[in-house]
Image 1: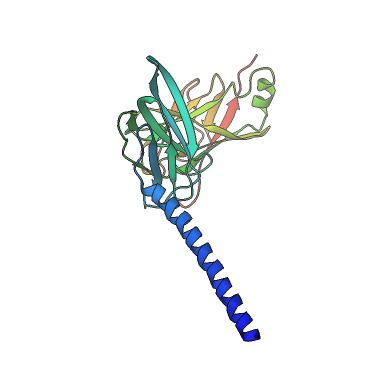
Image 2: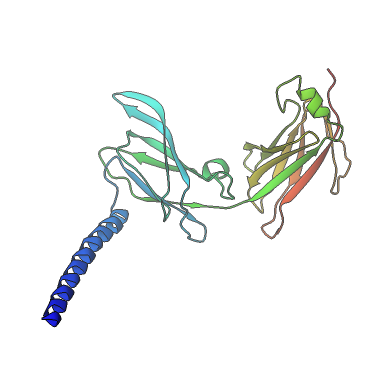
Length: 257
């Protein structure tokens, strides 16, 4: 009798497991098949990958374009994030031509809308399907500029003005586009600016000193005074570099009130 009860229990357990496996198999197949399905009319499905083919999850995707609704044209921005295997989807988009931007703040990934000459543009129409797209992204390296202010001239002067009114730093790429550097550390005697830039490409650091006198504190042009108001420094980061590139500027004198 005990053996018959064990057999009955074993059969019941196998049935439960089999039913569960069939249910989860259906869910898995349904989920994976969605990734392979083409987008419906008005939809955009895509994937972000690194140059070596790795999927890029948690990347911010922005669609920017002029859309037409009820006979009117307007600028629209739609945003989402990539999932675990780098995929993203937008549903029921208005008709229009969109630029696709991919960004991952505080990461070495370069936003193609900022650094690439070729923009990823797609046309969305309610009357036809849009092919799935793949966006390959490149990676750069951080460029850091440290401004030394041992006499705290900037601190004293900026207390009477708006913050960072005396110094502005940006990077000019090979296509003539200017990218503002981010203030990463704001101390009384030191300011650090940083920006992730492409490697193995000629760049220029644009120094807007706004009447503050700066000079290079290291390198071949050490102690060379910079032209007031506007100066450009040639720089190129190598993919072979193992450490973060730091360019140090020294404040010689701030503008007087």
